[in-house]
Image (tube, rainbow, N blue to C red):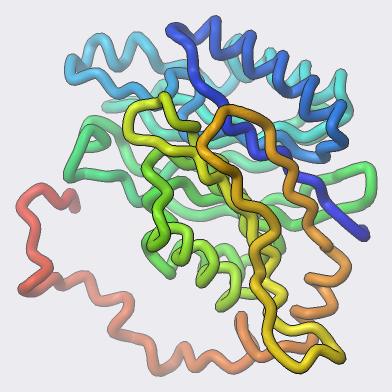
Length: 292
């Protein structure tokens, strides 16, 4: 696989699940016309990242992973021969989940992931967190690629991308809904560099409350043979406006780089990291709204 083209779907949501479903499918066709292998949507596209305070209303907006919303994108993926990374508020008890599904070009879901690091200090306290991180084998026209996912706040924990790397991810898809300023963008750059994985992030554009575009993609290749200095791993950074932005990942080059460089899992010492699995929290990090 020489390259993998990921369409960062930096789109404004509309006022209903049905409208977002229709707009999303229409823009998938535009992404295909632009040569995309994967269309990646921002976080919780089905409802435009809306989390009502009223639990009854919240549950009424949730959809199942085999309902009409997902079926439309499965059909669209198969018709276009293009993978779709779709996001939605998932029906679940006792509370809905913030979920991502990667649907392959045959219309089959090859990866389903629910956000592990929910923002319990905000509206996401009304959602259930996910249980684990997963990697799926994505069949593209140019070959197979091992693909993982993390969602927005997951990005702020090095463990998210590290677990995905350890499970074999070559590319991490990251739906997002927040202001992407320099520090958050630098987090993504660091996650790509330290794990030697490609990372693609799709954010909402300016016009969506709390968002400002700046969807990004990083290829992780900090050094190239024959070059005397390091390079910026940034493939693309979108502006603030609505649009589809194509990130072209050099997958073969990433794979060769991973075989030679020192990051990722090459020189880790996990036997020294036991404190990382300690659940005790002490000052100054105590927070009353943290869920168990």
